[in-house]
Image 1: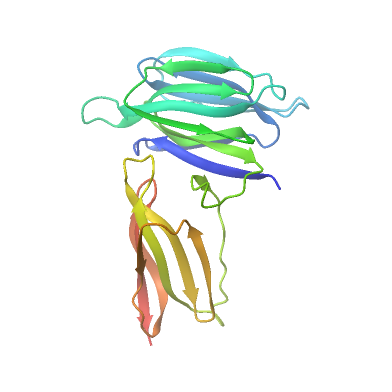
Image 2 (image 1 turned 90 degrees about the vertical axis):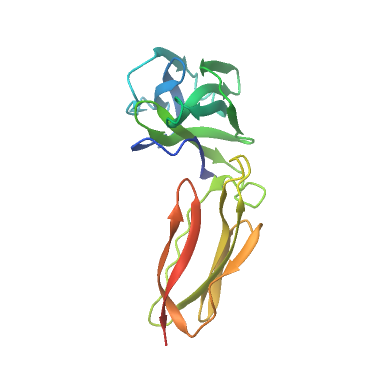
Length: 246
């Protein structure tokens, strides 16, 4: 079964604008990159082979020179991105400094100026069908959407999948949580939640994520969870519960 997987983003936490573009059908057929010493802006076009095209907004600022990548989709399709990121200036926001765009046919770039912190993503066995990230005067961060046969698993921890849990409050009470936290590979050992499991009065949901690192659990007491609190950035860094005691 094909799944669209959300991977990343890589880069900085700045940029007041969150952006996303994903081909509804078909694939990416054009990428426009504005760049100089960094990636100033980026935009996309998709093609579904029936004469229907999707065009994204321009994500980022107005500087840099413009380069257009024409992708002969479906014969040619996106398979990987490689790039670097670094502070725009001393104590300034972290931005995407360089990008390579790689297809099953060739490699485009580099665009921008290569910097200190590298990132890469090969869509092994899949196709990149969209991008997401944050931007303001530059492209602050970038990630990808992948159409793939690869399932989410502990061996593919960068793939983000969404699952909704519905509880019938008349019969099920959320009574506690358990999880793990630890450093995230490729993110300078930045610590975040690695997994979480939710417990009810008659079962559990999860684990969601990868059970590695340091374990934690909410205190065992008679009552129910009525809310959550915590801290977040690119990841969920910390989580706690509000309890109503019986």
